[in-house]
Figure 1 (cartoon, rainbow, N blue to C red):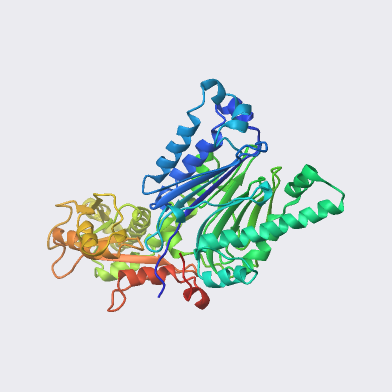
Figure 2 (figure 1 turned 90 degrees about the vertical axis):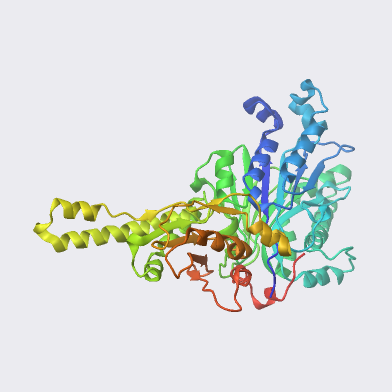
Length: 531
């Protein structure tokens, strides 16, 4: 069974005006760089292992650097790479820093195109050399390629063979590196196609270069590369001449959203990241469709093109439940509905003893589902009150009405996230020791030996913490005799249904997590590997 590999975050920005425009309107040509920082920070939950950024300077002259990259490892990687970038920028005088035209030519990371990536990995290869973006260099601007992705390619050997059979000799078997070489090879061929067209038209020297840069079509590159890809992916890329692309897998496994106005075009893994960073409405942010590519040329012309036929949409449950920000309008409603769907199973579990049942949740991601669960219980209790008042008819006294109307759904915050850590990254006994201290409880929040305690949890990777910490700690509250706290765990299925994971031998928390994350995989994908 394939283990969970990694889910990542991507962000791309294209400024559609000269840097001087942003200097004048926003007081700094670093408008794009600042927005990239904000978008990456808003997706920091997607990058615990490393982060990287790249920049393309479209106004650089021959002999001047036009592609820049910075990468770092660790939980503080975002701050580290931006500190490094600002350190390089800070070596210039204030006069030079506020001269947007000077910056566009001479200051590092003063460009029109930015790309950011956050890497999150629980297993697999680690190290700075595996942190995106990946960069392929060439003296021809149009042949330079920088890519980053949120992906799990399950047929890396097949992609490797596809490029090796053409005579290439990749130096390493890493999914990102192989994709870079495959796309780079196709980009070279696309550049040569444009070169031949330019020659046929009698162009020479720099006129040929300009023709190539004006006519590169990344859709051709993707259409010749993507058919062999198998897995879930959102792939972002930019060339040295300013062509941009973002493609989503045909199953819609990994998410991607984009926005464009007359100043900026952005891409991110999550919609609320764009909404917050640019202060725009949800309806203004578009979701990239399965198998579709978002393409922008060097002049800022934007279009979408279907690269692969869309398959049956099967979004990754790991993405949906664990990584997606709860502030997204659809995710929030979805999670509340998940909680509401638990009302009847919970009532059966507690023998309909609602007055002796306390509802709570495991912070922090389960909070939205908890609100939906409480709303569902309030609806149930209100219906009970209505029925009881109807039965009393005109004989109901003030005391009767007060007794009926005073009934409340009992809710408490019994669990507290005491330490911010992801213990499933640790190994062996150290993980169990850490798990025992991640959460704390509110003593006295339930009546010992009387109250049922129902706690909702929606984390897909809480296996060790659930077993070693949460259940044991909650049991210190001494819920009703003979019963441990009831943790109800529901998951999204690829068909839109909600699946419950009962405890049974041979199907523990980690196995459940792997199964949930792999619901979307075909047999071919299940047989693959990812670096």
